[in-house]
Length: 251
Image 1: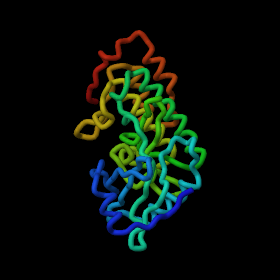
Image 2: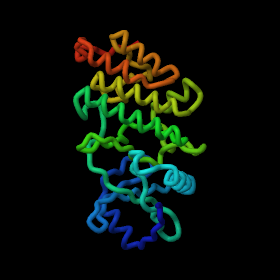
Image 3: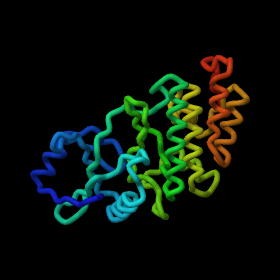
Image 4: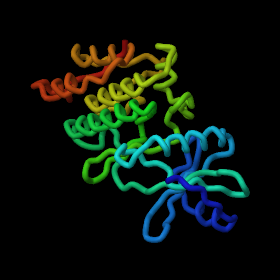
């Protein structure tokens, strides 16, 4: 159950004395210990809409369950009568990216993420950004972080990355299909062992792969992103082709 806690200037100074992330657009992230548990304080930057953010966090708290694999807020933090951030558990694991594991395990984790996103969609929630926002535990269980950036009940995502901007420019709408789009983008990245952002050149054009089956997936992905066909991609990975020899080229 989400609660609100008040802190003093001394407590705020202490909790923000250590920092593990400061480059995000919306917040700085600070680790701390409460009792014998390690937690994280997400300290909002002054330029964001605090009221909107707080409303979204409260909605998500009511909508999400523990088995949704989302790291959500435990407490809203209030200072001088105003919400300034929130605390959440510190999840230990590896940041998910194309180089996290071998290709087969990466795809398996991505299929698990796909299941998580489909479940969120039934609750009216869109993740919108899995790049840098998935932690995989030592048991191989993925968790979504940065959940206050989710879209829910007409409250939009708060940070529009290059993928979301390009998607909206092309299809003119934003809905759960965007999560499928990101799953496909990530799969292409895994196949090519390439960071997602490197799938685009300096002029904003896409880098198709010199392989028709995979290129068909890319074309479909960048079109409407109607679904995430993990079976087609896994079959491709398990084929006899040496995927390491697949090269990227410009249009």
